[in-house]
Length: 534
View 1: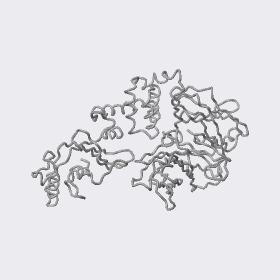
View 2: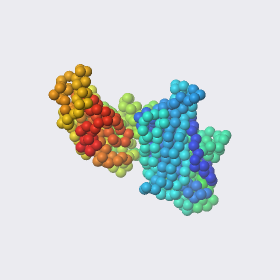
View 3: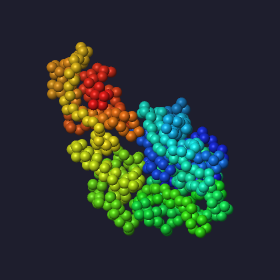
């Protein structure tokens, strides 16, 4: 994590169309992210990698909530195009939509340009975009669609629930936000607040190099309860699993009550061991009575600092039973299909080195954050998938979790229908053109062992394949189909084609499956199976 600031009063008039791209110092962590607090998620589509998050605030001047969105791209994952002046630039097409049901409450489509570079060796940076727009109180679907305009890859979309519930009459807190840096403002821009330009930090991963945890939030309408009396803003770190507070480091600020009170603070976390934590902020009156509080989860990686009670943290949880690091590594590796980019990076790093407690902590946190009330139940369901994949899809020197079928099964669960064909033959008669193609294949050296003898004319012979149909996938249309093929008749299946979003889509897949026996742009019998889903 980088340093965090935000110091400021609200804008009385917002420029909702402002866009600002800033250079960010590149770090391995910039492209990875977990869902937490103000809601954040990662986008990884083919080459492009990006982080997206949002925070919510309130403007007493206009008496309306507003949303800030933060979008960070890793330059090295995008396609930079040469410009007329010899420099290179990447462009992302961005669409942000807030909807309630079928009603669009906010929409903005724009191109976000990267900084230009002289050569393609200068892509060791990230750039960030900030948008700000107002919405009424309510629950929304916040949808982000991204496309790298320099790439042939299709656009990718993600959707997250957004809830706004700000009251004009009672004390409230804004989102609790981590910030990456703060520098004095020389020219007003969309990052400017209270005399500082503040760079949001779009991640909850705090590496060992970071010794200060900085944060910002705003307090609204506290004067309606306290009048002109001051209050105390307290911040500390607690362990997620046990609630244990780290009392050695606290941040306490005395604030005067007002309609809007900005609070910036910083905590020294140099001696904080690796693990799962909450940043906790509290507001207390002069009698030390708790008025408001908010928590923000984060993950600390600090291998150089050991904790004496680390093992006991997880001994009583469902991960405490996993003490074989080799097996634990498999479990972490198997999370890949459902993990965010940040989680993938962290798990890869954990697998490479010894550290039972850190691996247990990661596995616990992974499920606890997704299912706070029934983390163990959901993990055991997923573990059943892992066991099935390992037992049924493993191949010599390749674990089932690393196969295409294993990945799809882990990501989407068991298919609703499976068609397994080892030697499928289409009985349809071929026209003269196709018979000629079969003869040409034979003349090219295709052997009788592959069932392309002269007696095969009039039929189409397909390599072994499996067709999986899912009646409904999350955030996708119904009737999604995956077709895996055994290209070398070795028992090892790979994904050949799918109509699911973000999956492999090959227009010529059926010709490959029958080794070019079908003429181009002709739908065969397996193609019809794919369209039907059975």
